[in-house]
Length: 339
Image (cartoon, rainbow, N blue to C red; front, top):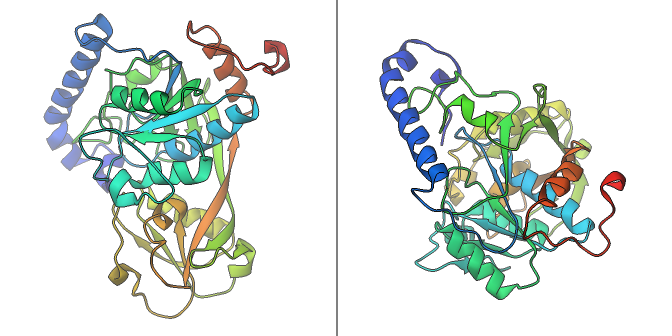
């Protein structure tokens, strides 16, 4: 969803929409209260579940955080799997795996990216309980599930909730939809197990993460070049993500001069979108690249970033998971004091 400018402040338009915002927040609070009271029973799946979500619309960095957590957990001997709604894809009536030849329009761009970048099982379906059960049936060695988004999907029981906050925009004007960007009221952050701040300055008690772009990969042949090679050239930058300006600013911070082109989140690219003047490189996010890989165009480059995680986050997560009854520690998992 595009992030309207009026969501950043409590101006006239936001105030006019505020009564609807109060109603939206009230419905969200009631739905959560019903779930917590057992009116809508959450279903366990036999392995620990970590939900990585947010309370605001637009991109906050959930997908790169999940990728970084998977990498860190695998390095410690875990066998994680990922489930997602498959937003933007035509998933169908049954849960489906994200395979190497799956297309983003079938399974969603973010699940396709996660499957490509992590090489762990990824299954998609709006019913995340069904998705987890299908994944576990196909991969019985999986000992941990990460749910991409789903903070508001209460049928799936969760053992840990991580909320990601955009460190630059934070919570906007602090109001719920449609007057502001929030799916739930700001107080919801007090009930999650941890808040991860993506960029900017973390608030007290939050963990930090930072995306550092460092290289570009040409889509047509996989050639890799450092971003510094693009300095001084005529460049276009495309982004169909929740917060395009974050990507554009990261390129400027890397010393590049770019003409920017923002598209809606989850945008399905066509060749017409890429018909930009000049023959210089077109830089895009990896999320956009999974939808453009089929275009035979040597101007297209995906910008790859390293994810810097707060060094306290993964040890904290493992300690939290160790208290879950279904937790089975890897054989070589170090003791708590050594993590």
